[in-house]
Image (tube, rainbow, N blue to C red; front, side):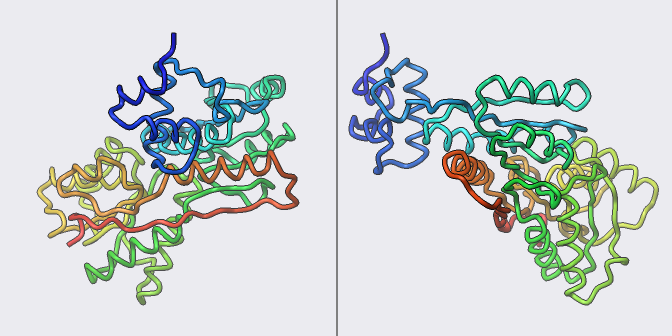
Amino acid sequence: MGITAKELAKKLGISATAVSMALNNKPGVSTETRDHVIKEAEKYNYDFTKLSLKKNKEGDIYCIVYRAHNAILNYTPIFSELTDGIEQECRHNGYRLKTLQIYEKNNDVQKCIEDLRVNGCVGIILLGTETTADICKQFLQLSVPVVLLDSYFDSVNCSSVLINNAQGAYLATNYLIDRCSKQPGHLCSSYIIENFIERKSGFNRAVREHGMSVGKSVTHELSPSIDGAFSDMLEVIDRGDDLAGCYFADNDLIAIGVIKALKLRGYKIPEDIALIGFDNISESRIIEPALTTIDIPRRFMGQSAARELIRQITTSLPHTMKIEVSTSIVKRFSVS
């Protein structure tokens, strides 16, 4: 026998009124409290049958995670925040969310698409971090709404929700130049994805607007992971390559790996070399010194993608949209 609302309230240490508002999707409790109550109710087999919140709509929404080289998606916390936002919005609107991972080297995309065709799929959120335009076009064959998350392609006619990468990199580079009064270097990912291309554009624009030549910025191509960037940067240092006095990194994983390599070789951060990253991952807070970085509202991105998809499922829309989510600087101690 499942738990009652009163029993659940007692177990969670909150009022029965708060539990009722959360379960019935009424205002008066925070999103975090609502999510916590629902998850605990599911855990203890609460009977949702009389609540409209749990009456699932016909058909399922699929979150498709396409993995190519897998260098970026191997860091799971970033993408769990995105999918948490998607799941929250789907649950709020009465849709089941199913997640499907497709590996470029192991899975037949067309076979997966045919399976979706017969499995009651009513809409797709395609995680586009490692996805190409051609792969995205294949999913559009299903003739169900598709929203591309974390990427955008001019040649693909579907709505997209993504970070404003150029804006974030521009903010970061401006801040770096203003604080350090030096020509910034660029720690580039050796794996080329659209997000990093856009970040390079923002970096270059900030450099030019400060009257500097982009060609004079020191650039190192490094693996976009902590261990990979650490090893690659040690090679750069040990070869005696020129180093910049400050760097913008394509992501926090690269920045953290480089900080570790520089410290191992005796450099002080930020006294000798300052760094700013991009993503605001949890490790950026605990590395010494804590990393100045660009924050991304990932849960909000996931919610926005789900809202747009559900809008397309329920309403016939004549046009697709590109939704860019702005970023902000988190100032810590890797830039003085």
